[in-house]
Figure (cartoon, rainbow, N blue to C red):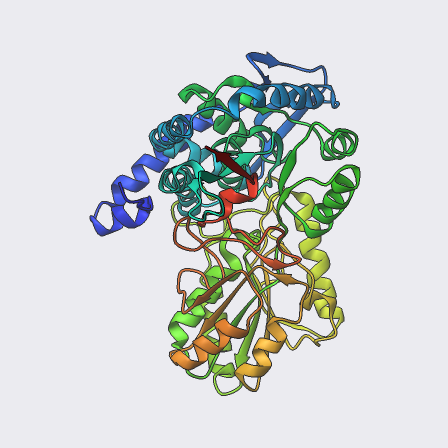
Length: 522
């Protein structure tokens, strides 16, 4: 069966059943609300382990509510999980790829059955609005179905070689797994990104130890329990809640970890990689953020440009590695774009993401709010002018801030090159497309980029010259955001990535395998 993206809300909208969609989301929210405050164990082999030290996680949408109580591992359980995964790999590496495909499809179906509970979990966990939360679950299901199809289409990555040097010679190329992988996932896509890295390891015959973000450990717990429930052997996938400093220490002393997959900040990722490979050369799959830019030319449809830039910059509060952080607008349309963009931002509904009308929910934690304040102050002190937002909504039970637009900021400011991860976008006037692309590329990052232009030659010039792994033209739903598995492989160049093989694309699974050339003779 050909791969088809999930697209839940679009489907309900096309069918005129928007009310049914909201009813299902509300039911999911109610179910998760009834689960608040429960305690969740570490999952090792067939054991559920509880530690004396606990991690009490609050929900950012109402910090008086406890999302759940989780175990604070001191490193002993993580070391044990790695040992279990290494031992389990000896059998799992030789499992039939067809069986792994079957389990993956079963997991996709189970995730679909749980869709609205999982979406509600994400909303309570990191404050994502209902549309983006359901879209994240859709993305997760897409990863499962797409990777299953990839493995099937490539026949388990076993290929007979056509060349012959000697009579009776037969060569076969076989892609083989490495061993036990450590999966370190972020708070912003606690289900989808955890899923793509974990499944990338498991479906290719590796084993996985999942370490979620301490801010968002619940989605990963539900993912791992789902994998086990549909039949992935319990020793092949473990779940451990260890603080970051513990994980770093264990990684730096263990040679039993065959590889690690990490999504997070550039500095943390680079430091982990350097220390990890200093012990022994080993593979890593890294996605390390971005400083993503959108270009608006004089030949753009400004309605699309404004909407796409607004959604790219302020969707999920800019807490996406693909968020639009910089906008370069040609001088001919700069004043009009700015006026339209300001008007669009001022319509933003900010508040409780459980409400169907909310676009922008809270930031993830107090640290993010403090960072927002610091960046706003810096922009003002360096000569920038704020035309929207800039304020924190004083609410003791949430972390609400306003979507902020900065203009006239001198290009010498470090804000032009720093990944902000809060809802702040910088806009600059440029004279032409060539200047814009030079500025787009003038950062260490190279994750996503977008352009708005109705001129095909301008779009082609942009694609040829921009230094980013995932690029868009005239994307109204998000100028630099919203990559879908099987449609837009997602990954970065330069400091934004490592393997050059993008998640949700045809080459991603190869990052978790190595080639073995097998030759036999008559």
